[in-house]
Length: 328
Image (cartoon, rainbow, N blue to C red; front, side, top):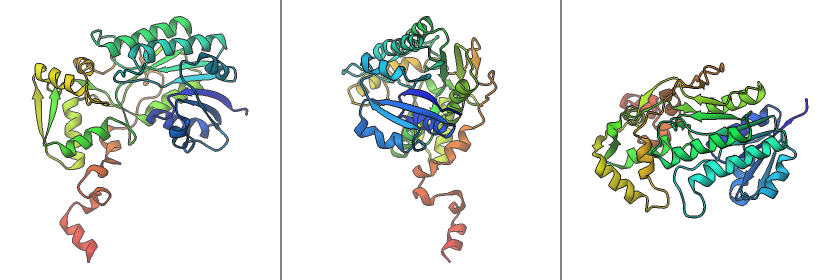
């Protein structure tokens, strides 16, 4: 069977790497576009089966070069997104609206079989967030330019390669307390990265055409519950400190000065809204792919790195009795 050609933007992140592994093992050839081939090529190439991957260096707004890539593609997957804006052109509007619109136009022009775009859950409600507005505008432009597109809206995506659980466990290890915004009551339905890539693969391989799919895990957790689970997994006790909104906004304003802010005022506005299915659109369960991975069980597999003793802190060494028996 002839291998299908998939064009991937954002292939070096946790979702992209996982997806590359899955696609190339299933007889799909992938072309990954990156801004810096010297930094990213080793990370990307090692994820794929030999002979099934091509890495191209290009600016995402170099339409001439990108157009050439569309000529030999059947599927386009856009995984690019940012959580905060930078001064070098990485604005929410450019990344979440203008660029996806271009990909949708080219997908239609070159008669691609699929265009899959990764958006975010909860953006309909968060109208006071620049991030959410740009995501929503991007979705509208995509469906206008390529009505057959499939837009995936995941809740928080986690795995050993993420910037969510790993950053939180690092902070919980180092800080004597942890701030809670809006009392930690914001609801999420975290989905494991492998479950999300299973959904993307299912859409491609089974020719699923559904304008918007909300992608969620099997359980609803508040932010406070997530923090408590992480503390339990790394064996730490920390004071959880609810921050009044004025103090939270002042701290976010300060963090925005940093190159990679811990939280921004725009992200703070997002936390006012629950990150769970809206019941207006299909979910991954509705297309026959309910998430099978539970937060506790999956994070436990790599949380040992933040426990006292690191790799030697597996559960079988938890008691002093076990340790003595091992030594003797």
